[in-house]
Every structure is written in C-alpha cells, then in structure tokens.
Length: 453
Ligand code: SF4
View 1 (cartoon, helix red, strand yellow):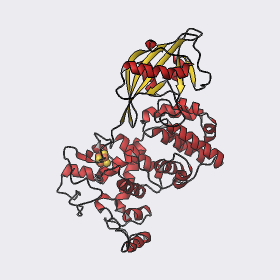
View 2 (cartoon, helix red, strand yellow; view 1 turned 90 degrees about the vertical axis):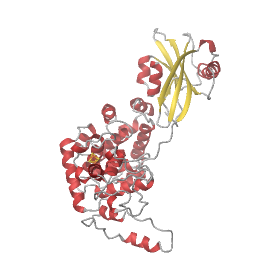
View 3 (tube, protein in one colour; view 1 turned 60 degrees about the horizontal axis):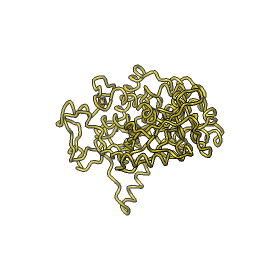
View 4 (cartoon, helix red, strand yellow; view 1 turned 180 degrees about the vertical axis):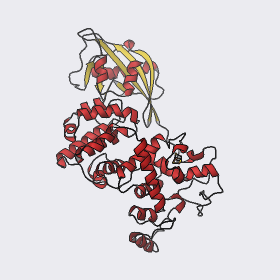
C-alpha cells in the first residue's frame, strides 16, 4: 500500500524495491504499538512497484490506444470542445449513459441528448418528462433524473461552472461517485487521477494475479491505489480511457485476446498460464504469509483450465428478488377511431420513478386467476372512476423482465372499454395514448414488451 501511495506521488524505486513509507504511514506504524494492529501491506507480487515497468506499460498502452481506439462521439467532443464546462458536461453525460449500458446502444442516445441539450443550462431547463422520454430504453432510469438534478444544481448554485477537480466533483454533485468524478476530471481537465470500473478491475486483477473477491472493499481500495499509481501524468484522460478500452475490446471477460494485448509482457496471469506454477509468478505460497489479502482463497486455487480468466473473482451474486405484478392493457376506440391505451404514471421515487405504465399492481404469491381478476378490477376502478366487471378481463399471458435486483413476471390482462369512458378527473397522472404516442412516451422497456405480448 505504501508503495502505491509513493508511486502516486512519483516516489517509486526501481527493481521492485520498496519505496520509503510516507511520514503519515510511519506515524501510523508508531501508534499501532498502542492501538489495533495495522494490516500488513500486500506482497509486492500484486503491485506495480518498478518505475521502469510502469513507464513501459504506460507507453505501450497509450501507443496502442492512439492506433486502435474506437471513434466515439464523446471522445470527439472531449478532444475538440474548447470550453471546459461544456467539455466536462459532454464527458459527464457519456459516463452516466455508459454505466451498465453497452457502447453500441449508448451512441444514438448520446447524440440525441447532446443535440437536444448541448449545455448544462439547456438540460437544467428541461422537464423530467422530457428527460425520461429520451432516456426510455436505456434502463436504470434514475440515472437520467439524477443527472438533470445535478445539472440544475450546477446552474443554480455554482453559477453554471463545473467543479474543477475529482474531489470537488464527487463532493458537490449529487449522483457523481468516485469513478465518474475521476473520469470527468482526467478526461476533461487533465487531472492525474485514476479510475476503476468493471473493465479496469478485470485488467488490473489479471495483470497482477489478484484473485481475492474483487467486489470487496479491501480489494477495491487496492485497485484504486493501483490505478492512481499507474495513470500517465501527461495524458491521464487518454490513459484511463485506454485501460477501459483494453478491458472492453481485448481483455474481455470470457475469451481475452492475449496474443494481441499491448501489455501482455506485464501480465502475470498470462505468465502463470503459459509457464505454470514453477516460475517467478506468485501464487498463494509465494506470497509467503499464507493469508495474502489479494490471492485467490486457499479453497479455490488456480484452475489451469480457466487460464487468465481465473481473474478476477467475485463473491457469488445475490439472487434477484422474485415478484409478480398484474398489469392491464385497457383499450378503447378514440374519437378518430384509432385504438388508444390507458397509461398511468409511477410515483416520483423508487423503481422506474416517474415513468408511465399500464395500470399495474403487485400480486401476492399463489393468487389464483379469479382472485387476480378481482384485485385488478378494484385497482382499475380507481383509474376509470367506474366499476370494472371481472368477466371483461382477458388473461393474455406472462412477460418476464429482469431488473438488476428483481426477477419480475408481469401477468398481462387486457380489457376493451366503451368509447364514452372518461378518466377519473382527480387523477392527472393518467392519459389515453395511441400506439405511436405510447412509444414516444417515457415508458419502460418492460411495458413495451407487455404491449407486444
Ligand atoms: Fe488481459 Fe491477456 Fe492482456 Fe493479460 S495479456 S491483460 S489477460 S488480454
């Protein structure tokens, strides 16, 4: 750990020698004689502690990036926009969209967003409805909402000026975490600060044979130290993007292209795969302490059939919650004869906040069809303002949609209403829409699936 901190400050020694611990570390060591024990630093095999190697890795990675990087609209903006606030905003939007979503999907959304709201000021003036409409289909809808809230804060409280360091971005902007702050600051302002996302975790864990649970705070802390130590001081934004690009296109999860990798000569997982155990490459015994915090757990040692994909490792994922929801496609003939559907707005907080959906309600487990129709009919009455007969409800089928933490089954019903049905006037959060208007509204992907069912 102390090596990494020293490396971040430019104080590394060569040949794997340990850098002198900074003063703060010495004080901690001294006080530990009276307080709780300070954890031992990780073995050097898991770190980058050789200045020459760091320089070589930076050079190889940046040269590869210059030659192979993908042409992406946010990269063009970051490279050509002279105004620092606009540049930071352009990077910020891309980073928020790219969280949990593939680059290929994001490009079109990004272009439309930047065309509609090219500045923070424009976004601050948009309505949440407009934001949700443009975001519809990208998933994790609260991201768009939070982005807009933060933009409003910059305009109203920070005089329209984006914070200029990663620390201030994280401190002052709601919804901006350590990763996003680091990405904006390094790419837009050239601050020499690292980033750690899923791609970086994979690359670093392979480069240094880190096999402990990569989602644990202890490992994540080490990876941040490592990213901060490695980041190129003169081209931090390009370096961070290069590391992420490597993880996205070469050091991919299942079948990494090690033969084409620009940093393969620095990769300990690859060496481990090529030469097996009797080499300089460390494994649990080589760490010497038996309980190395970064090695694979002793109960799950290196599996030679997996090769470099032994790394990274994660604790088993929590199973998603299982839920069933009854949803009803109410339809009527509108005044021009076109079919119209009733959609209602979800609450402004929680899952799918503020989005529109067909009237829906959660179902208790094991509820039979007749009972489902009864509770659904009661629920529909609240929207239509008149009794709904259960015999009119027709069961269409089931639609499954997986949210990040919920395995949702929509039990889909349909109900055809007479033309003269009017909505409960007290409920403004409901409206009739044609199919075209439905698709242009802020509706979730799950509801689009329901309409197709
Ligand atoms: Fe990843 Fe293979 Fe490159 Fe190592 S050599 S960083 S495992 S692609």
